Image (cartoon, rainbow, N blue to C red):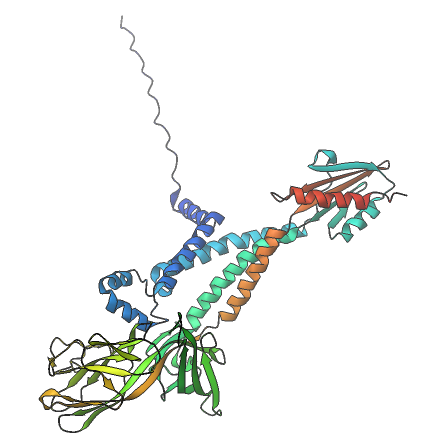
Length: 513
């Protein structure tokens, strides 16, 4: 007889839950991106990302200050430039935040707007069975009819619907309307900024007194067009800088503090239009058919005449200087004379607007040009202008240049009209006068007006969403017994609604004789 075999039950393999899959992950990513929490986080990052644009100079606004930052802190400037902190608003990381915020707001706001439109068209709900159980309720006897109660509530601007023995009224839809208006305005604001980036442009240029400017791409020192901008898109205006005046506090504790800047321009709106005078000031731009030109900076441009070793005039004109001391406008200049013979000449110059001696040195004590002088440091040799490498007009590489004469840290300054003979028969340099220069930014932004209107709409929407409360009122009339109930749908609005509910009850009560 054979012994029976033991039977072993084998448990089935556990069923693993199916993964989300590509479609599921895409849905999850879309829901996360279009949630209000994500939109708020991106809005915070958008504001936070704009902060460096106000802390550090921007190339698109003031390239001279960026160059000065490199001169003062070259190592720090290189690291800042690696993270686009001198070009914040055109950086890849700022563009990524901008696009994500735009998509998030669109995916969040548009469905809510559709839901709100349906809710506005929906009638207020019918009266509950027991109105006294609501947060606000009161009952009294009266001969009030349904039609009379509905009329009184309509006078208080409630939306009203009636039944056989009840009245339902609702008010405060503008709260959600304001909330949606605020978010849609933000969406329009982002769209306007994007449109300005595509169809607008910015340009920076430095103009010396007596010189002119024409609004053409080649005339700009730096030009930043949108992707849809062409050379024909620019408004064909021009102007001449006739004079620039900067006024300062002359004495007292605030001596040297600027009071006013004014540039006198002669403007032609088009090649065929008549010239007109215009006083360009800070925050008062020149406007030519929507193209705005702002005054953003100024400085000195001393004029020099350089005669080379063969007696020929090799250079004669102004040299813009960059201020390295904003309090006194002590400035530094570079003069490059590649046409000098028999050897090229280069000069470093220090311009002092108001010069006074100070213990064997010379310093400037006032930003105005009261006693202008210039200290000159001459060099000779190959300036490197023919090797094809770009050079800054504000820098002179002296590594391969020969100093002309004894080089002192504090050479005797030249007054206007003074001439200095150069060593080795290289020629001479004369300080002939002082002009001033202004730096300008010209901008065209087609999204400027829509952005302004969107900002105004956002403020209006925010006010509506913060001041208006959503509330409902019901009235039930049966056998001369009038029951009134009220409910606020806004968190924190109970106390203010209590007063309004009392006024509604008083309005519905019969007048006491």
